[in-house]
Length: 345
Image (cartoon, rainbow, N blue to C red):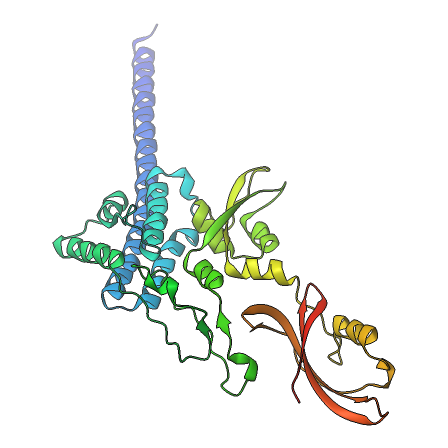
């Protein structure tokens, strides 16, 4: 073989080997950049959640519990709205799960389950300083020794008794009370002990996902918040649920009341409610002589310490002397049946 051909072959092999090394190095550098960028995005999520969470802690120390609750919700929503599948990254999943647990323990404190705020900051990598840890310790003590929320018995809506107000802890971030018009006779009602107890101690029920369910479709079927379901199950709002998967659904007081009342009765364009019309047909001697003046909108109210759908009706009807009189009555409805009435004039 001629010498110059040998030299050419050697040079070609050298250049090819050099190209392979450069290509491999470039590929590794690209992979490293992607990993670093992904890690930076994850850190951005946890850091943003940490900043908002700390604002919630400061709100608690200032006794701004409602604002604290909003801040804690916002810190959780940082994960939910990020578009990142939390379950695919161990650090994000641990931070998200522990954040939810810590917020719950602060909102509904129990002596056996103290909020582990310091541990949460370590799990999420928040790099807190001494002042931050002091803030965390202060809040941990506050939520376990929170003063009892006194209830004003002179309010229009008051609890039936004050036995439940003897608990040692103030539970819940948001104040839950009804504000009624002082001109409304039916507004001077009471919340029963059972109802107040449910408000102060929410629970959860477990349902199984159906084929093709998502968090949003399940929330619509169960008539609750998609964000709440996502929070308590460590999911994204857009998550698809495997058929048969057990999902925790917040069992709210509204759910319980609606199961007692049934669906809200529908009204026709002129305001008539079919269950009330059925009541007239069953109980009035001459229902066809009635002349309706006004139907109110249907409202959910409490009457004699019990919840009802209620509608006020003003009408003219014949009395026993065959003379028209003006009558106004309130009809209390459960499961599309009038169960109580009250004469207003």
